Length: 149
Image: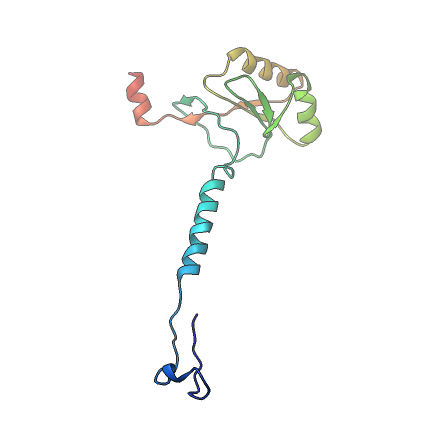
């Protein structure tokens, strides 16, 4: 903001004698701050995305569930994650039992391009530990049904 306080007295103030004050708001600093914040949010938005990127297969019927169970993710490269932390398949069942003692089962979320052998090994390891497995899928939409025909 710019203000001018002129009493009309004193040397050097004779040229501002008729102007009492300037009360204009300078919005340039506000615009600068807003643009800087916009750039920061644009650069960090991709970091705040949730979870691993896995494209699960689409099926005709999907059962809705709201159970809180551990999620084992199999990426298309064959990497295994237990709730977004990388794990070894040999320690998988023990970690599920240790970290989720009261869990009644586990979700297996596998990329549709994942090697089936890895998915089968995960299901087998959880089955050996008597942990029920549910497979995560997404519902098929009209475009997918038209492609299949």
